[in-house]
Length: 256
Figure 1 (cartoon, rainbow, N blue to C red):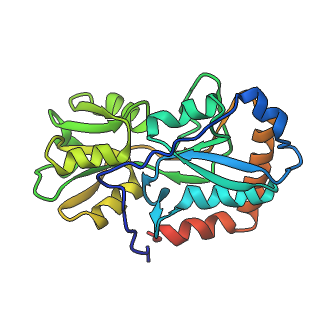
Figure 2 (figure 1 turned 180 degrees about the vertical axis):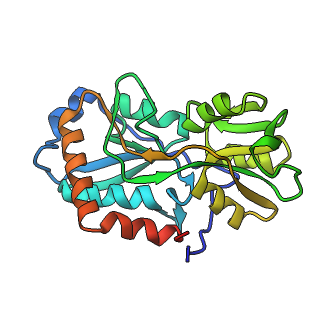
Figure 3 (figure 1 turned 90 degrees about the horizontal axis):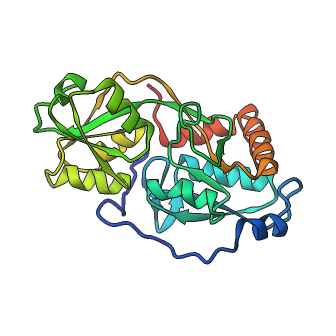
């Protein structure tokens, strides 16, 4: 059974201000091939349960825990850089973060200067709406104002599979759900497990299947850092083989 997830960031985003050196300086300071005990910085959106969120004032979630285990295997410590969805990949490219994660469908996304690791989780896009709404499936989104994360696979799905919907782009999950809760949107397209989490935590919300194809989530890494990409993929393979990844996922996601 999925544990109750308390969402402290539904109506506000906490942005950490980080001083960062240039990417070239980062490469000089860190030895990703061997692991030197320094920080591995993960940029993620902490309003995105069950993948990344605040629990008892500390970062938690599937992607946070997997990244923490990857950091351990690299001989490093994980540090979280909280960023809205649209700022995560730029943070990776600019060298503010080593990894980026926010349900990135690595097999389908193309971003200049960014490469994606092997996949650690399969999911789909879903619909989040209000219980009082007449929307009960993708066909009900025709003419509806639908919130999507700018540049996400959900935005792509909405544009390609729901051409009669009226997509509205938002920078973060919390912003989109807040807009839905205040009647500025009719629905939101987002990851299925995130939709379940918000529907469970926020009174009056309902999640629905969208008919979207499977997606395979991966970490984003700067295209300039092949050493880190190789080590991350090795660590992910070991975690999967040892059953650690599956155990982490089952902690947050109930079996269907």
